Structures are given as C-alpha cells and as structure tokens.
Length: 95
Image (cartoon, rainbow, N blue to C red; front, side):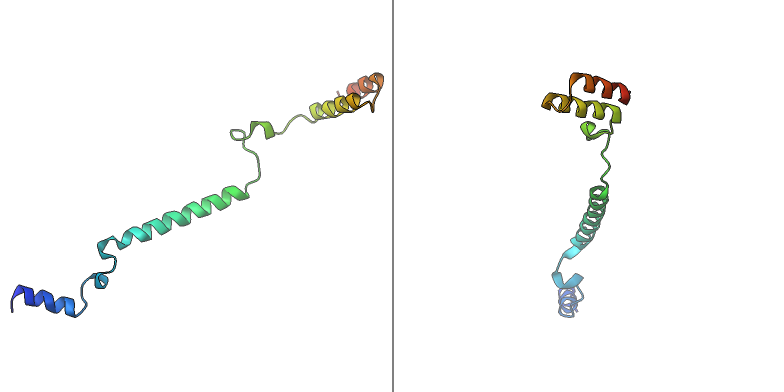
C-alpha cells in the first residue's frame, strides 16, 4: 500500500479533523465567545451601578445640603416669592 492510498483511506473514513470544517482554528471561536461573555457580564454589572463616580461625573457628586438650600432661596427671591428680609433670615437659619 502506498502513502497516497493510505491517506485516501483515512479521508474516506472521515478521520480528518471535523470533516474539513474549521480546521485547526476552531479554538479561536471558543476563546472569542468566552471573551464576549466576560465583556457582557462586566457591562451588565457596570450598568446596574447607579452611583456617580468621582472621576466620571464631577457635576453629580453629592453637595452640601446648605448650599442647595441657599440656591433654592435665591431662586425664590429672584421670582419675588420672598422679600430681602425673609431671604436673609432664612439664610441665617440654614447656617
């Protein structure tokens, strides 16, 4: 039996790798799917975290409630809802 006849017998019996589908690179799909799965899990965890981060959203960091109260009083003063005396008294009470 010659070498060519032996190789022909092997391929006729479908002993070659996956009948020619994928060859030796099939492991690459498995690695790609694992990486995709890990990225999906990380994305879901980060999407569920609603806390603002100091490095990502400095404008959304928690502020002093007194400052916000003074801003509200200033807005009410500007709208004419408070007199100057009422505004000054309420600001003193906040501090």
